[in-house]
Amino acid sequence: MEFDPQYLAQAPHLVVFTGAGVSAESGIPTFRDALSGLWEHFDPAQLATPQAFRANPALVWGWYEWRRRKMLQAQPNPAHLAIAELARRVPRLTLITQNVDDLHERAGSPSVLHLHGSLHTPQCFACNRPFKGKLPCPDLPEQGGSLEPPRCSGCNGKIRPGVVWFGESLPQAILKAAFQAADDCDLLLSVGTSGLVQPAAQIPQRALQQGARVVHINPQPQECRAPQEYSLTGPAGQLLPQLVQRAFA
Ligand SMILES: [Zn+2]
Image (cartoon, rainbow, N blue to C red):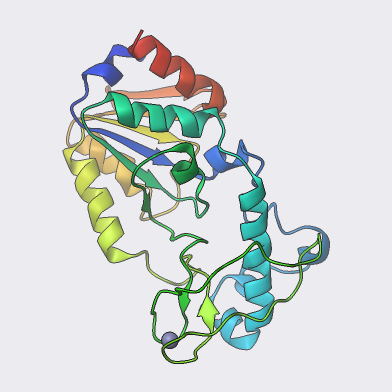
């Protein structure tokens, strides 16, 4: 069955759920693809766990600050812009992302549920207090390198990136809000995400279970099992602006 763009215009509550594919279209490599050059001999266990930070905080902080610089240099793409446009057009939109960059915010999306945290909200490793200091574009060599993390103004603990590491649970309040939106929505667009990682994969599933339409937008076709499930194949930066244009023409 073909997805009718009019469904977009008619949905009282729309959820947009985005993953790495949307950032990739802005030139941001996935975590694994970024493990090149200086970083090619590292694996996620050495860079993205609490144990790794404890063992070598400057290495881990340097890696994430290098990633953050790459993201600051990237620009929102037409998919980010189309989602921000949707938020202005529909009665209610909940935007949930697995991405740790701020490209949705910079595209103009008013509020974003960051399921995996954000590189722009670092916090104290010891006391969890949010870091209030300035976080300038890091002074690092082109290939990145180790960088001593700043210190917490409350307890002098080391500041860690505001992202969810392997072995950590997702922020519970945000996950709860995301599940509630999925349970309540009429239409969910799942964009640039394989839908395989739990518990994030439950978000489209929950929307389907309560009868909402679910549209997968991915470069690879997605198998659709439910009658109200659709797969649109291609770059989100092309498909989303087309959908918005056709829905509100
Ligand atoms: Zn602290």
